Amino acid sequence: MVRAPCCEKMGLKKGPWTPEEDQVLINYIQLYGHGNWRALPKQAGLLRCGKSCRLRWTNYLRPDIKRGNFSREEEDTIIKLHEMLGNRWSAIAARLPGRTDNEIKNVWHTHLKKRLKQNQANPETKRSSNNNISKCYHDALHELELEPVNFSSHAKSESLEYRAVSPQECSSDMSTVTMSDDNNENKVCLKVESQRNFPEMDENFWSELSTENSEVVMSEFSAVDGDAQLQFQFSPLMTMESIDGYGSNMHDSMDYFWFNLFNRAGELPELLDV
DNA sequence: AACCAGAGCAACCGCCCCAAA
DNA sequence: GTTTGGGGCGGTTGCTCTGGT
Image (cartoon, rainbow, N blue to C red; front, side, top):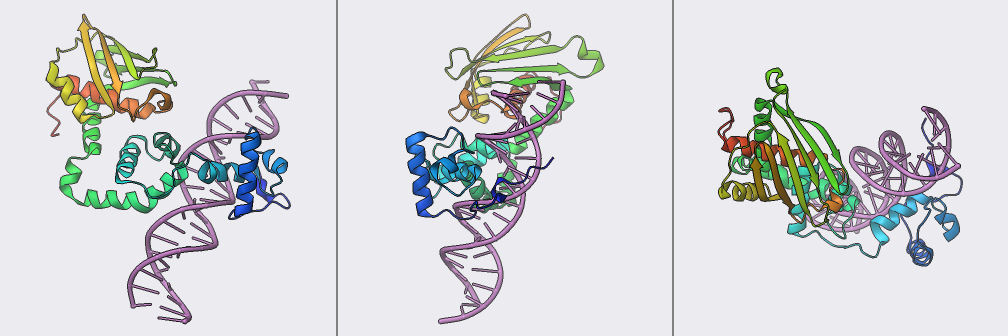
């Protein structure tokens, strides 16, 4: 079933908004809010569809919108977040206060894609890119025959389960990772249950890990008889409020964690040239 | 001055998700 | 369990601006 576009209804205006229309919309929302977008234009006396009003408000008229050019810092953040999240513009916008998904999408298509292409044309840049590291640890995990089998994500808790996929290991090697942020302090506790013995890790392991993987900072780890506990702390870019729906990113973080763990323990095959 | 091409950006379109009926 | 409708999202369009010829 294809729903006909609401603006095709008789008499509804399309195209650029006039300053008068903007003012009507602003006045109405300031007075009454925007409980029901579909009903809003009629009540406000606008010859627009609700969708058009919502878009105009969220992308342009909202008082907390930051206008003007993107700073280099903002652009770098977008590039990094795009690397992590892909074309999830609203998720990226959630981490850039005052910027809208539409604006970020436009900046990406007009500026940043070009910038990235230029960077990738430079082999030195390419070698050191996070993408390359990411591919390496995914490959490594594949070789280890560890893969995520279950993942669920909510605003305040995450659950992730890994298992070994080779038949001979399947029954003996199962690890379950449960994350929670009970105190809502951006510190995420993980309980790892696994038959695999965790190698002992020194201070350098954690400092290197947090340097190379800026989304997450390991703060504490202990492993006793295969029952491991560790504490994550996310960088400011990775707040728990906005983590909902970032399953793929958490996979990356956990993949990275496992990769480093087993790499350090010398359990990785000779397949990496990071 | 006129024309053209490309860049930038606001707005639209169609689809999806989810809650309410 | 199914249908319906509102809201949100990502992709795309098309208008405007700008710089080059």
